[in-house]
Image 1 (spheres, rainbow, N blue to C red):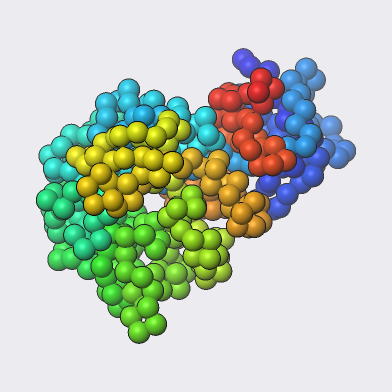
Image 2 (image 1 turned 60 degrees about the vertical axis):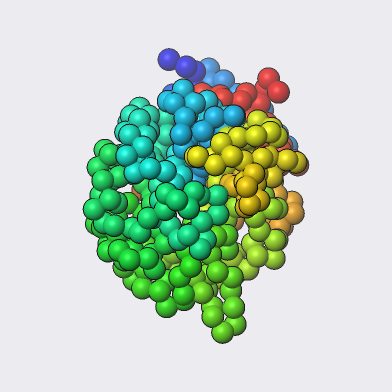
Length: 394
């Protein structure tokens, strides 16, 4: 059995706040204790046993492992259409950037293909390699299709929604819908009944239609601001409805391309840190490089880290990794570190129903954590007690 590890001297971000010169004690795959290094009773919950391996992280931050609700791939590999090996390659890429828990997102495709692909992804979820499946499309609006093939779009028929849920063998976690389309509200109710998150996105809904979707059970805004009508003073649209309702968590892609910093600040101001989830919406090029890729059946050109469709030029996902989103949030957007941790770890863990295991540094939870240096660059990643990126090796 691996020796107990004591990560000492860092600024540790706990649910109760940041502890300076703190520590995290890891036994096996779990967090055994941590917090302040001050004196404790013998045998107390934060006391490290004799012979523990101590890692000096003075001058660094230790935060919970990142949780990505919305991710299409990385490392040159696709979650949306690749093989099981492709998916694992993408997972490894994002783990090396701090994402210790990832949901694999599909894109619009033929319904039978999506069902077959969901079966393969479900096996990986059952093995613990991914945290489940997110269906983004085909039940979205042609008016706000973004990087989705319009010929394959369809109205959200509850029977077809159920077909995808069945194909996912209980591993479906979220589905993005244009809830204003025929069958949209009934599909939201079906998803809610099956414990699957109904997300409003790629939508042309009005303010009033979005309120109906929330009342029917929708609980997430898919990449807020993107692929939906802009906020207007006479036609407030879905953005206003999604921001003002305390039942809704809003996804944000904080890469400096999808959102102006003022839009991100607007979302944090109105939703609050408890209702924001940072996502990547990453495609194959994340952690890999510029070039030509496929996103589902559509060709994508990545130049200077920005992914756009070859035909039409629409933004086609991102090349973002969550360590970059974290650093940008703190250094550019000037958000408190504790708020960023909520948005990148605790909130998505809660949405997935996994907050009893991940999302915060608490005794009994999985030892999933990220080590950042003083400039908020990633230097270490631990998943279930094992170093993915060892901070002592550089």
